[in-house]
Length: 224
Image (cartoon, rainbow, N blue to C red):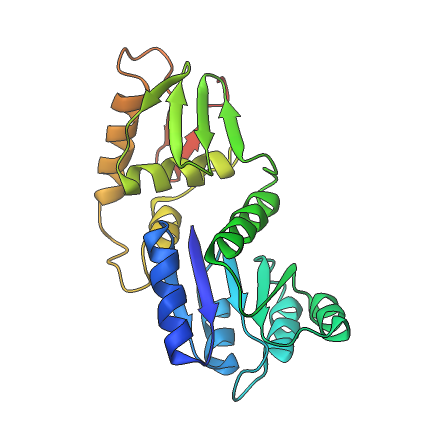
């Protein structure tokens, strides 16, 4: 999943960047509202963490502008302001959740995961498709209740496909959501990950879990 973090405190920005990357997210960073708005308009994000007290354009105005642009990515407000009136103002501006500083990393991660699942129409932390079960909390995958060992990027690809089960996902879209913005978008590495997933999820060739639609992309097999 690809996440945008908007925070003007450089130390906290670095901490959040490291935390999210350590937990498997691709991360873009912005330290003011104007930069963040540009990134929102240029790249697809599965979620954004936004501070309210930002320079150039404050967080509330940023959220309003994002929603005016018809961008629906979930937004989690992260701020030191804890008055209930400000929480209401943030939610009414278009944010989806609100967390005050200081916070526990575990709570932040839990809220991030919940918002991403909810936006994808997958409120349950366990996503099942036929015999395939993906546990988003433990980041583990099972087929017929048998554990399947995946690399971090193989897991990311499968997670994104399962989060969008009825959607044809292009190679470019997959790349944008599992890598940082400076990655080579023309790389054929996605094809390698898809091939490995097919072998690991379906070693006997019976399930055929991932369809390839020539010239369009990939999709979880609708027959599962």
